[in-house]
Image (cartoon, rainbow, N blue to C red; front, side, top):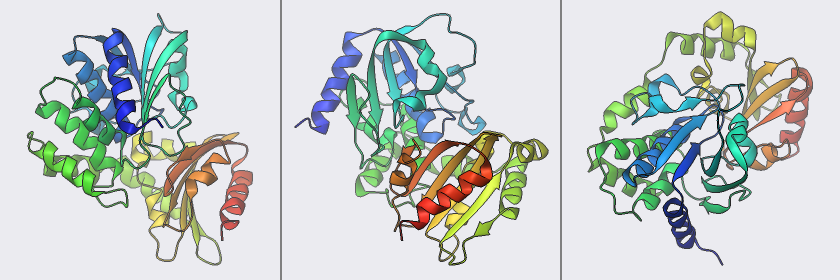
Length: 325
């Protein structure tokens, strides 16, 4: 049986045997995706490797303080000027999550897949997957310790950021003893915990407040009170002056209502596609629900993109959730 420790060693060999790397994370990157990207970039720089960091989607502005975050290229529809043979994917639950960055991959590319999602289908040439890790950043903490590199505040802050955001400020059920031990070690490297909590979890923009207000005005619940959902349309985004990063955390509001088992956020992409975010209070495995629609994630937090009209998708998703009782 291939153990986690063996997978880490295989990943180490992958980094040592190549030189020119492309580092990518999932579309519309969140805190763990961005922090994992720059963490890998920092490691490659310490090893004297050449690398490019790229993503489909803008990096949230509040993440700009991270090491070299400004050098993460936002993928566009334009064809790439060149392609890469050695790819490192971080926090991508399945290959589709790399989005348009796949156009930068050589046809015979080799892939190091580092991820913590239980729904990951091991699409890499080398796979480091730890489903019980709270964040990909937690895996990278173990990974970095395999190399003769000296930790500093920059990389410790990046890893801490991934842990902090994916555990909801160390409040979610994935906050294990190992997470807290790891966080403690990172603080010893000079991480400013209160500052990160302020800018990443507490500070909000005015457009963020406006779009939340709009979302809550759309709140609906099933008659039994077990499912609650909100909707945001492209028109809402424009009228509120909101960006995708302003939507982070919106899905938690319907989920947090007393008695609600599943909270859902429907974000209309266009007339024929909707992004669905799902959160569970504990009794429903929303990862399996998301997989039914080609998505994935965790037992308590998952998502998917569904093609079709909003009204039809809402009805279909609610039917799937109700089938869980």
